[in-house]
Amino acid sequence: MEQGVIDVESLAGGIDLQATVESGQSYLWDRDDGEMYQRDGATGGDAWYWTTVRRDGSPAVIRVRQRDGVLEWESTIDAKADLKRLLRLEDNLSAIRKTAPDDDVVQSAYDTFWGMRLVQDPPFGSLISFICSAQMRVARIHSMQQALRDAFGEEVEFDGRTYNAYPTPSALAETTEARLRDLGLGYRAPYVQRTAEMVATGEANPGEAVGLDYEDARESLTRFVGVGDKVADCVLLFSLDYLEAVPLDTWIRSTIEEYYPECERGNYTDTSRAIRTALGGEFAGYTQTYLFHYLRTGSNED
Image (tube, rainbow, N blue to C red; front, side, top):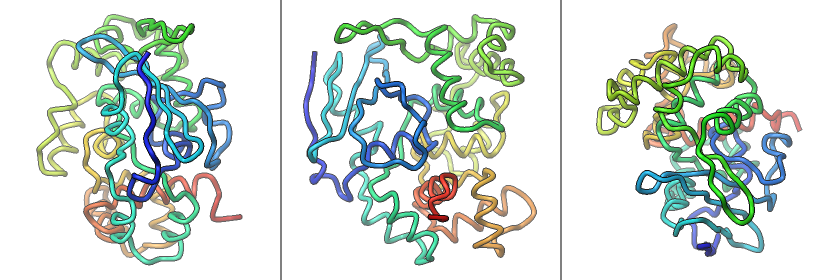
């Protein structure tokens, strides 16, 4: 077993691990105690969280928790670099916050969930999980991904327990729509199966968007079945390092209607451009994520 600690005070802006992984931006983490997404808006917990990554083609488990001013981690690999990437530990939260507008709702969101970082999930898992996200509560989206792990993921033994890796593209491509429907994916089942097939056969890969101009990158992702502009923006923001992306979901559209009505332009592309500018440009996706979590959890009503 590999293990280590990361001093929270060494991170610019610190971190709130619970807010980071339970804020609706990732569905590829779980809690050892089975309480993932059961306490909307909770912060500062010390539960063990786990995910899996692939190293040299093989799956590896990473567990991490926050307590006593440190992030404690343990893994089947030396996972420090993986955690820095997955939890964006090198982002300077204080500097990013300075790019946000000085609006009451924005500043309240940052104050309430300060330390929440964006995630940088593996592209394929992020793509599939957000295809599953349409018209679903965050807890349900998460449970779908765990069902996919249990049904199609490779088993990894770690610390006396069996974990399941996130399925490979081939594993999901080789299953059937009927089997995916049995797991509760509903009308999303053919989208997941066909998108996995596209990646497994080399027809397309979400990583091909990296390096393109932002709007070209979004268009690249819409090649995948079941991926529109909003899902594409989620993958860009939470996996592919496009921190300016602002997914126009229900909560952000409500935010625009109430707080930024001048940004509504009648179509996704133009509204997206306007709200990105209003929320600070380069790091607009960070501010969007704080607003999303703040409003979705009803924290603005406290």
